[in-house]
Image (cartoon, rainbow, N blue to C red; front, side, top):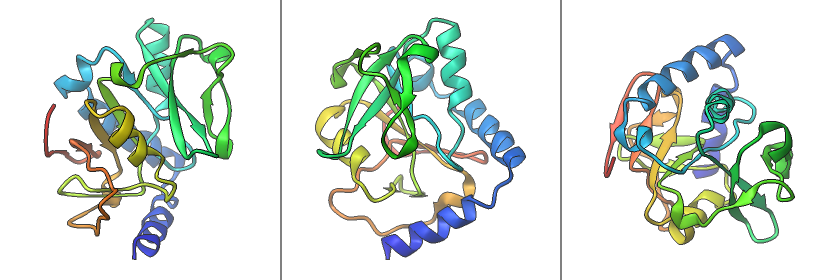
Length: 191
């Protein structure tokens, strides 16, 4: 059920044009900046967008220009886990990594303790109005949020076509505190 739902929603998301991706992502970031937990975050962790995900790269680069902290995850495939790094320079601190996604260069970026991260911006395939989330099937963010960044506020970014009324969740699926789409902000906890 999860796999077929994920596939269906991702195919729908993949039909968005580059213009729609940019416009809708811009609206999502406008909404996100209104959330106090995000705007006051000392060490927010972002993901680098891939394929048709909500675009994060522009905000990451803007923060780096302003010398604001940016934390990005490095994917360790063997352990199916994420290791957070503080990025200071896009050109030297970010390289192609697992799954072809840009991620921290461990030779130049500074590793950061997961408990210093106060907000985690989370990608996903499907979300629901109760702040449930399905990722992409690897469990990387579920493990990171439940074991490493337990105290961080979890903010899922999604296009409205990815937000359902209710999705089936397994015990290991980590819920978000807030979900932001181009049309609404769904707040379940914290923030």
